[in-house]
Image: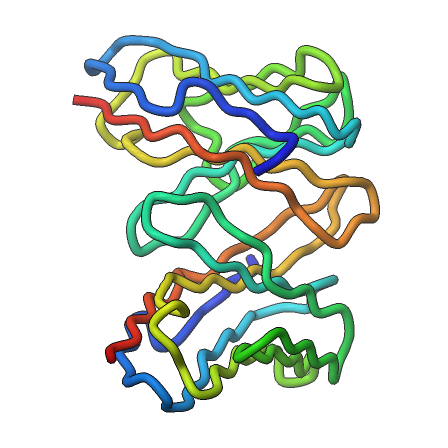
Length: 112
Length: 112
């Protein structure tokens, strides 16, 4: 996971609370992604940012907002957390035209 | 809508045996990836397959791609306990950025 950091690593929220997951990279790549991983379902794309200043919805965007603060940072916000958002969240970096993706260490979120 | 299916989802095998994990996908794609995930950890990139007939090998793992059949395989030769993990395939499509669609994952357990 060198070059991709996520904070926090763990978080417990109550239903209705809000929080922001942070992702930062030091690889100077353009594309950044947020995925969630649920048991038995693989990873699903929430939002992505192909470059600074742009964001697009993925497969499961409802209940989330994102912000591409600058080239290094991409944040994911839960405005009103729900138990269905209990998951592991991964930030992924992809270089333009590159064949590899770089996965962050993940944030384990529990909503009670 | 792109769908990616893996089988089997669970695989328990003995050390020294061979086995194959299958990954089927529903529409044309740009690239196909295989990842490994250990419990509680992030994903580790194993292989990227770029074109029809591509074959990649690393140690006891070999991946292949048949784009006409929309099928990739991950073959395990003479399994060892250290290969126990969950393996994911993911299909990439470029639409204003790389978008990965993951299979459900195959949980592999190698028993002594």
